[in-house]
Length: 291
Image 1 (cartoon, rainbow, N blue to C red):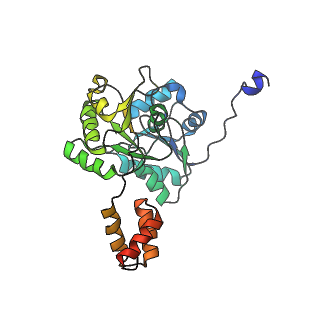
Image 2 (tube, rainbow, N blue to C red):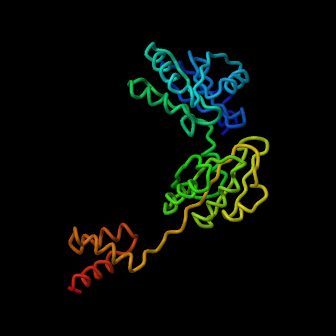
């Protein structure tokens, strides 16, 4: 097959943009990560709602685009939602962007999207750059089951409480964090979650992109994780499954048999505690005096 067939000289032609709300992903660092469809939507937009209009103005200028901008941050999201609904009812194209990455992921655009959905107005995702997905690709940790937990609380007590709620899950965890709080957060993560494998990713897609990998305790002690600059995403591998004790199984069977016959109780406990059903059924019969 020729190079021309593998790499066609022209991209697919632009399509007309129908009226609706478009949630447009923007680059998280490297401006070359802007998608062609995102450019089509921004060029056609009657209004662009932006987390920071100054940041978005620079992005539009980089691509030779001009658009009417309205602020949509934590303080202005309710008003932005009203404006968006009004414009959408008039049959206009409204684009919603965050400062970087995919809208609605830890940013105020959720209010606008919810308002449009509640009114039955068209809402379309325009996928693209995402620091969450970029960090997962770079971390080298399981990505088949993932829980994104956003930002942790700034104070240690509240942070540990939230981490405790996530401790028993068997999925990879992803957090956003700031440089000044990184070391303390890693220390609390190691204390609550155990010394799991993890990666601290920073400045994704930018010139100084970095991934520091190791156990949580090693990362907490690593000087590279002591108040680094830039946007930070922490990826933590899943914990090992805890094996239920015989006492745990007996307690679960006792409770289940107040509601169910032995066979069904054993099946329920088997699923809940990840234990084989046959020994549990035998134990249930023993507990009933029939074994």
